[in-house]
Image (cartoon, rainbow, N blue to C red; front, side):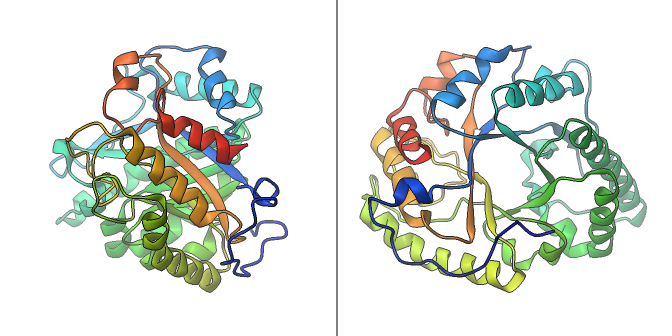
Length: 330
């Protein structure tokens, strides 16, 4: 399946100020952290106010290298990760005219990076594969029944894809039998070039924590320069696969030196300007590129927890970065 009217013609020239708002991103997304307790329609209003048009909903599952059986939808976990919570959040989003990407995440015990997850024994692989298949098909079926617009088949599972490519190819075929919307996979920023199945999906999904510049408070101009090599490579992969790029995650913490390694939750002094600059440069670097669909800000809390909103974190809530996002999302 292809996006209607999509073409990989490059658009590297910066648009004029007069055309920016008519060339906005197709997907103006927010990643909603699963609420701990039940929420109502008020959780969506701030997302609408910031001019987003889509949200990512992320039901987590859990496993370990010692016990590869994947567990999900368990009682006692956060409400937003249960079937009840996922369904409710999808319905609340649709009521507010927000599209949805359902994006299952796998959490590996002891904080192991999912991209490094692998197993030694064939029996363990079979156990993991069958339970992952059940997990993904469960949510793919749910997504189809609720007319979810985008379904993400996995998040940052590079080692499993490299070691078990036939499994992943077969899984994609099976997902297509139960889900009729658009499909993507959330590849990490450093391995999206190596995912072998982009042509079987609709979007090239990237968790876009690209390392940019090691300055305490990088200027927007210096950040724009740092993006050039990455936009060129993203365009190349988009053209090669004839699929548009979708940033399944992107974001920056409000802390010093936040653009050097954006995936790291490093401690440091609060720096709201650095966060705002990073977002502004991101939008300046991608606006007007026909091969870029947009993406999902990481992340946004729906629990109205002021402690989490105002501390050093990825969320732009209550910070100058929120106004930057709103400016570009309008």
